[in-house]
Length: 219
Ligand code: AMP
Image (cartoon, rainbow, N blue to C red):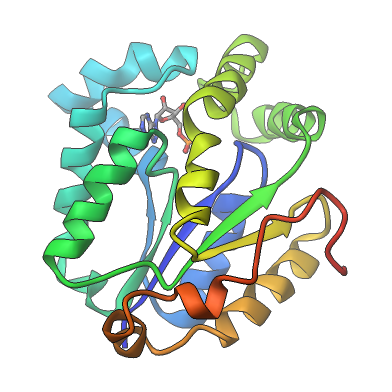
C-alpha cells in the first residue's frame, strides 16, 4: 500500500529532519525539492547554473521548472511504495500540477502535515543552521525573503489542502522527538490507500483534524 505524505511548513520548522525520520521508519523515499536543486548546483549542471542566482537570494525558482523536476522524480520506481514530499509544492500552480500528476497514476495524499512555528523561531533556527551548514541562502536577507515568500505563496496551500480534507496540523516548536511522536501517531491512523481512493479520498478520516492554533495540541 503506498504511503504518500506531504509536509508543509516554513523554512526552519523541521520539515527536513522529520521527513528523513519518516522516510527511514516507513521505508519510503524523501523527496526534497531544495535538495534536488542543491544537487544540480553541486554537480554544476546547466540547470544548476540557471537557478543559482534565484536560489542564493532566497527567491522561488519557476513553477514550470520545479514541476518538471518533481514529475521526473515521482516517475522513479522507488516511489511505488509511496514518498514523503518536502518543499514542493510551494505555490498554488505547483499544487494543482501535483494534483494532476497524482490523479494520472490514481494516487492521493494519505496525509498532509503542516509543521507550524512562529517566524521569530524560524529565523533563529535558520541563523543557527547557517553557522553549522553554511548554506548560501542562509544569509539574513535571504532568510527574510524566504519567509516572506512562504507567507505569500505557500501558506495559502494550507487552506487548499484543508478543504481537501487531509490536513494534520503539528506544533513544531518542540523537540524533534516530541514532534516525531505526533507524526507517527497520525500516520498510524492512515487508512489503507486503496480504500481511501475508492471512498473518494481520505476526507472522512481526516475531516475532523484542523490546523490548531499554536500550542493547542497536546505535547
Ligand atoms: P529548501 O531547501 O526547501 O528551503 O529550498 C531552498 C530553495 O530552493 C528555495 O529558497 C527556492 O529558491 C528553491 N526551491 C525549493 N523548492 C522550490 C519550489 N517548490 N518552488 C520554487 N523554488 C523552490
